[in-house]
Length: 147
Image 1 (tube, one colour):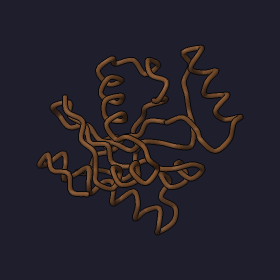
Image 2: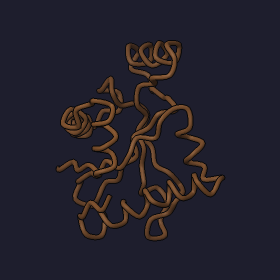
Image 3: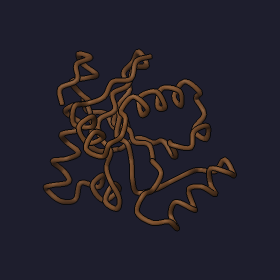
Image 4: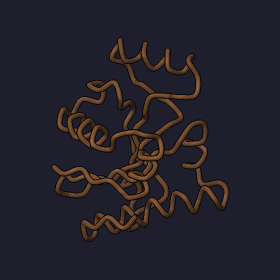
């Protein structure tokens, strides 16, 4: 298993003074564990129905990340973590997995708009999600990271 990262996500992490290597290693450990509840950093893991990739839904995925906007939301996350419950937030990591079990981490959609963007109800939101799908498609077809 390899975990790759887009330049866009790398730049966003660097802008926030975050270490991309920690994200990559944590994600890999979480996926290798095959335990959705086994990591504090990663919550509910699910797929998008849109946009489709190669005509198929459920290829582009996202995993919920700890909320940053309010202490109340973080407290809910922490309680769910303690209970081994399903952790959710409105901050998600968008990614894709290829047929060989390799991953590309594409981008983090921030609070409070992550789920709104995913609905693709505005031209701007549609453009964002379709750009993720393009990056995912190239990775799935060739293994290349284009963004």
